[in-house]
Image (tube, rainbow, N blue to C red; front, top):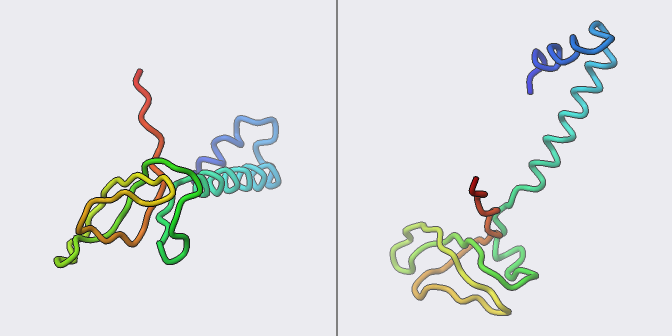
Length: 102
């Protein structure tokens, strides 16, 4: 959302020249954008929090032992990690939402 787009929306209101309406629209947009950003899955360092709260399948990021080649893998967790041998992971995150078929 840009200032120009906010001005376009404001013109459709009963108060197209109101600074307070423009500021209110901008504030609402910023709050919505922040909530969306907070809802996005983020990588969690195993140093910060090694284990998930809930059993399930997760994305893990790390490297193949001996090569330092970085890689993303899925791993199951049910109290302990079930992960590919020779893979040392440094971060994990919940899987994103699955796509919806139309």
